[in-house]
Length: 207
Image (cartoon, rainbow, N blue to C red; front, top):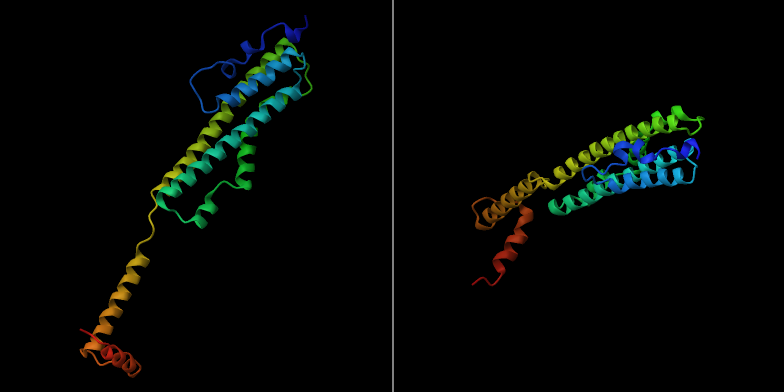
């Protein structure tokens, strides 16, 4: 039996392998765990496998966060009737997605120090500790980003259409109506251009 196969990997992976409290990212964690356990079973647990497993998990976290964010923003906009044009500028975009991925991948930097090292019990244990720390850091980044989007969704949900333009328009219409009535009733002298309108108005067959 080789050194790479002598100790169960799950014991080294700590909280990555432990169920713990329910998390919205449990399926991502299990996919990360499965990739490492399969590689361990096949005796192919080299550095590239660890790195690729974490990078795949980071990309999955990014997708999960941004999909949830878009759902929440669209649902909030439907509640408040937020303008679709303004909503489009607030939805997750490619630039924001890339920035989030870089932040998630940065949590896996401790794995880089094992590049070029062979898989032994000692190095595998250290790698497992590094990926456990990387996973917890990535989950923290994802949770903070998700909370930021949720806060934005709450702001959109509470949004109300500005009332000042409506008040101004209503005031102008009311003022114009009063002025027209005064011109028609003779309370105010009407301008010359209004005379044909007044004649037409009083020529109607009023009851």
